[in-house]
Image (cartoon, rainbow, N blue to C red; front, side):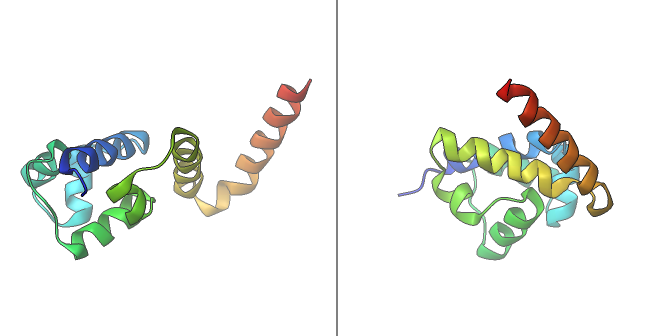
Length: 107
């Protein structure tokens, strides 16, 4: 059984990782900021359409929101969410930064 407060915790952490305020997230989901707050606290549940929107806006899978992941998978998911939030025209630059970083940590 899925715990609503765990879903809310993952939701809030991902929202903060992407630098979204609760109000911005609520607007993108077409819900009230109060309902968004209640979701993050696990006080309320959400419909499947809201879950789908949430997954898209937060750039994570619905499975992650519902069931979570191991710490290693979560780190990869967080990195992917940040990469997906990068504008398409800036991704080549981002790839260069990542390559330089990976080369530096090998040394």
